[in-house]
Length: 215
Image (cartoon, rainbow, N blue to C red; front, side):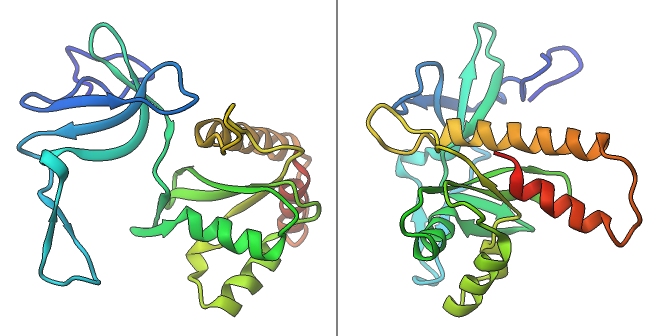
């Protein structure tokens, strides 16, 4: 945590007293790693709906945060991306793998990857990067309804790209995909800010058009 006496811009601060941390290597990530923490203020484990009343304890007390981070020489932690296959939307955990499965069922010839990026209103939002031309949310909404999936699993944004980021192994580069999604979101915000004011009834359509054509 950052404090008035010890803080550094662009970081979340140092690890709290009495806590330990470790960085596990992630394929394709040369600097930093996947952060796990351990300490007296870390939860004991998980209670699963499929196994009520049974505590699934953390392995040796270590909690995998799912964050890809770097730690500088003074111990300040900077979050670089997410490796966890879930997004937390309005306090609900949504499987990003399930989002990708819906996209694959809709567009089997395309390559699609779902990531989560920060959202000021809901905490996180899901962005789908896909090589499918003319992909849109309406198709994903229909697919979610047809399969009984939650509306929360429908990506807030869909970006059509020429290629999704891949590691040297050919697997999806989720850190690179998250960085790309953030960059495209920033570009969209800049475009909307620069766009001339339009009548209220036309503004939503203009935003939708910009979202679907950013590549």
